[in-house]
Image 1: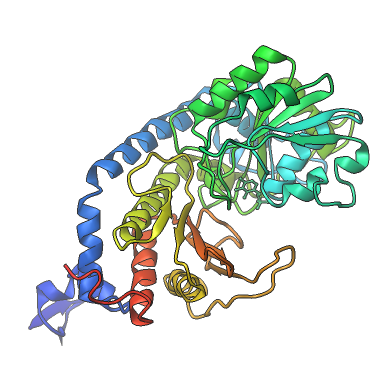
Image 2 (image 1 turned 180 degrees about the vertical axis):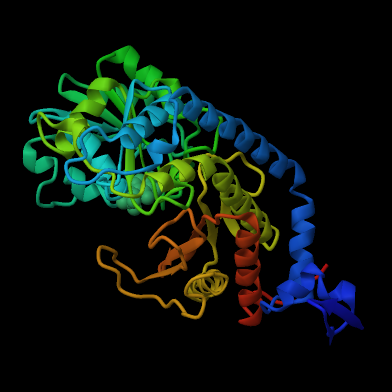
Amino acid sequence: MQAKLCGKVFMMKGHGSFMTDLSNQYKQFGISESVYAYGEEILSSLRERFRQIDEVAEYNQLKVIRAMQECNVSEACLLGTTGYGYNDLGRDTLEKVYAAFFHTEDALVRPQITCGTHALALALMSNLRPGDELLSPVGKPYDTLEEVIGIRPSKGSLREYGISYRQVDLLADGSFDYEGIRAAINDKTKLVTIQRSKGYQTRPTLSVARIGELIHFIKEIRPDIICMVDNCYGEFVEKIEPTDVGADMAVGSLIKNPGGGLAPIGGYIAGRKECVENAAYRLTSPGLGKEVGASLGILSSFYEGLFLAPTVTANALKGAVFAANIYEKLGFFVVPNGSESRHDIIQAVTFGSPEGVIAFCQGIQAAASVDSFVTPEPWDMPGYDSQVIMAAGAFVSGSSIELSADGPIAPPYAVYFQGGLTFPHAKLGILKTLQNLVDKQIISADFFKI
Ligand SMILES: *Cc1c(COP(=O)(O)O)cnc(C)c1O
């Protein structure tokens, strides 16, 4: 068959329709026709789920645009300052945009906040004083917070500064232990930390509505207790945020959902004026607070990233739902399951063997645009008792709103998968994982034949 392009006549390989066929594109990534067909069958069952995800994205897109319009975002806001960064219009306006989006009095959104852990540590350390007590009513917090709090001893922990910690675990069925929480609250209790995402635990992720019920319960006991929500991985997944249901602060990382894949660094704290001011005084210096902190040249990525965040989060969510259904139907234990409602972008799949975890992560890596040629292997990562394998080929190093996966090489041999700036990329990654598991005969090729 002949085709004309740029005036030159050349021979096309195969037939025209086959050339532009999607399955042929996937074949070039080593994905067999049967794996592709299985993926298409799963996808066709997910149309209604995807429609609902798109609706939330549309709702949140309008919320973001409205926040930007209300705050008079202008071209000048996209520029940056240097040095002290006094009168940084773009930085100050962006913080107003975050406050408008989260419906809070104020916000701190800075490249000087280096990651999610830093944002959370900042919110805690600036709002707690010696003699105060911190309470987690939802069980053990995210791993990196153990050293911040002093659950694991560390230099400069809250514990070293005389701030005590109490924890009430969720009940076996995942519900709040209201009686335990009531008993744990005392005169010293100053701040309650509520982690929205399950992180790398097996408990369910909390919906915003459930977070609201918990905050309501706490405020009825003592209205002056500060309720902080670790919002990492949860932003834009629902139409409301924890600050809409009574949270005094929502805290997160810009290299997860709200940076939309574009922010190269940063964290945010959105909340009550006094809480945000305390955090600013701690981030920079007493007396200086929000007035200093040059934004350099990266504000346009913060604005554009926030603008894209609702649809980027939707793409990551679709990837998570697709992965859950692909593996659930093959008989693997998945959390959340294929049909339940979602409150964050993380998907856990339990393979029950180290080979399964490794094959999955290597499949994700092979689908990357950056570093696709490297083969991840399990390694002794500092701070973990077992070896860990990680797959990431990201434009922003370590960004987990981009397609990524990791898993500890320990029972139950589960892998945690998240991200994907576009759904086609997430789909490719998931099909690659499945192909890898088939090629390594961890999943029998007959198993999913349709
Ligand atoms: C990622 C995450 C953090 C820590 O953020 P880093 O940017 O990795 O420091 C804290 N809490 C939760 C729930 C997270 O998902």
